[in-house]
Image 1 (cartoon, rainbow, N blue to C red):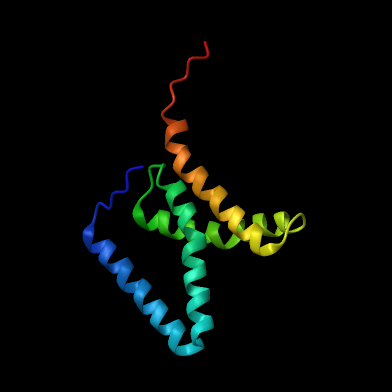
Image 2 (image 1 turned 120 degrees about the vertical axis):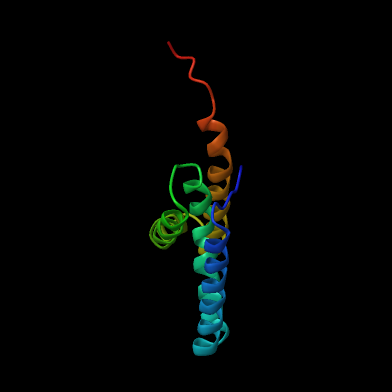
Amino acid sequence: MEFKIKDKGFAVFLLACLLVILIFSYALFGMAGLRVALGIIFVSLPFYFILNNFNLEEGEKFIFSLVLGITIFPSLVYALGFLISFKISITIAFIFLLIVAFTMPKIKKKPNNSK
């Protein structure tokens, strides 16, 4: 998987925003706020890698991954939570999404031989 950032200034801006959000959430809510902010970031990470396979701008990938991470990931965990414990279902859903993200480029590049 190739991870490129076209504009280095945008990457620095995103990291600065991330740092401000983490500091603000820690200052306002303590350790619980920091854990929630980091949780949202980690939940959105597999979707960012999935969206990295499509022709999207960095800002679009960032926003779409946040939205998908906040909506789809909890739905997967909730549905899987009926079968097993929620702590294990969180781990399984995260690993499953990472596997999808890293195998997607290999599937996408596979030649189509069905004629």
